[in-house]
Length: 164
Image 1 (tube, rainbow, N blue to C red):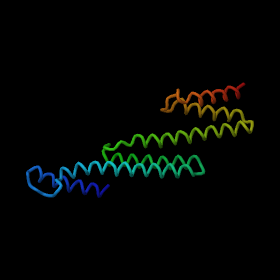
Image 2: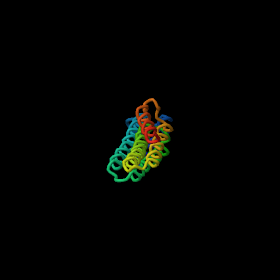
Image 3: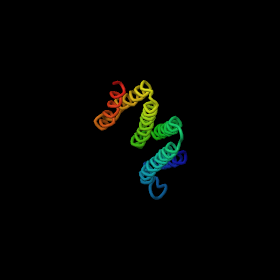
Image 4: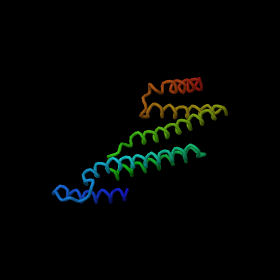
């Protein structure tokens, strides 16, 4: 990022000469700046994608739910730093959505695992609590409930069966 900023600063300095009709370099600074913006955007996007892929790969092999979430949260912080340095010129929303979706999935799996284990052990109260946590997560997330209708109905069925 720093090297890209140095290049941008130098091209902008040369652009002032070009705007006054003074010949500087070939191709013209204005042409180089246009190409620079495309290359800069691609470089930022590639760097952000690399961060996301590395975080997802690491989170998938972690032993605990908490360490997986921590890994993804660190990647989200890095993406936010990218965004602050680039001034929102690069759209990273899809990458952030992948990371937050992964956190959502990890949390849901965690609640369901606790519920199934408690149900297996005969601890109905703990199983109901864990199923309710999972249901709350599904109902309050940013994902449309229509797309999660099957999961929601399965969890509601488990809760109903355990309360009877």
